Length: 116
Length: 114
Image 1 (cartoon, each protein chain N blue to C red):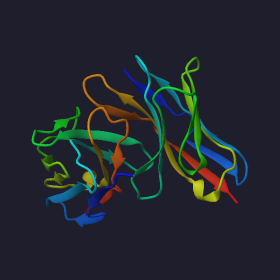
Image 2: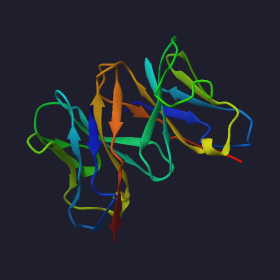
Image 3: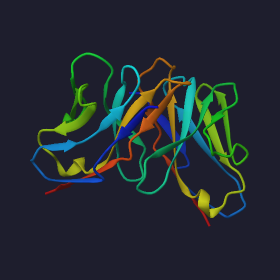
């Protein structure tokens, strides 16, 4: 099946710094990628949807300037958490689609962000 | 609006016994339903989906799910549970309104005891 990778798998950063998380589709071209956030023992919350070459669409309540999403190519999307704070600590998961008619989303393994 | 409910936070079952993880949904139009499994500190893995056709859907690792339109349910089942099935299970519905979106249930933690 299709594989989605994320890097890094874990990151610890200091409050006030920025951290970038990469999401790659390894064996297919992803026209659309999604970024989710998951709090402990909770479900996935969709943060934003990104299409290659265009601006991301953010869900209500998600700060665009804080969570910068770039979908520069058909195989790479990045999420940058700017000026991170401890409350940004979470598990971030990306997901990819080959096209909007596809029934299946392929999920990355997730990135655990800890802000100290 | 589309929604998914998983009424049980946790399900406990003994190894070798059948298991059921419940899911009910609310959609406008035809439902596109999914089950995913998540192991600790990992992303979601696809188990199975219902788009159309037979109400009993077979998926990965011996899991199956039964689509029941009258009860708006899509319960996940397995005839004989394994300890390795212990994980977090999410039911999800595809929302096509206003663009592509997947709505996830709150998740059900499955514990299989040896």
